[in-house]
Image 1 (spheres, helix red, strand yellow):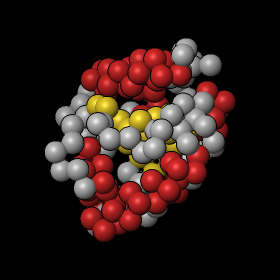
Image 2: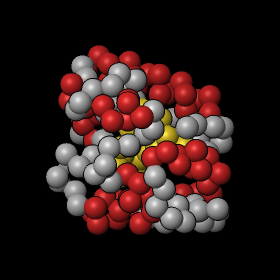
Image 3: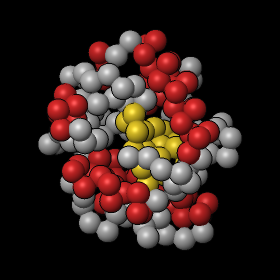
Length: 170
């Protein structure tokens, strides 16, 4: 789900088995992307993965760093992530979202060659696109509770409102 001139392009690492089977992003039950998106105010209600098309009307989109479906993101090779990072840079240049939000610290570090990256706004942009790194919303990421994940999404939403001059939810 991607289109031109989005407020935020959320970027997962790669499709998991459930997402690969259903064709929808963050589709596995227990993935916290959709609840965090709602709790942070990006969406007026909690969307289901099969409703991902509604994001475009809110100025939001979803893509992945790597296209290969795996059971766990750590099954991707470093080369797949680097190749995916280059392809993502091209997508961002083409679609021109205001903010790119990569959901996965380790994947971002590898894909973009930034081993010391921390969660939050990044010092480097991609052209006019600001870059953020958010925690991976997978239920396998036990370092972040849903509340902590939602708090990081809220920080991003506040920045999007500042950059775009109004609420991120339309």
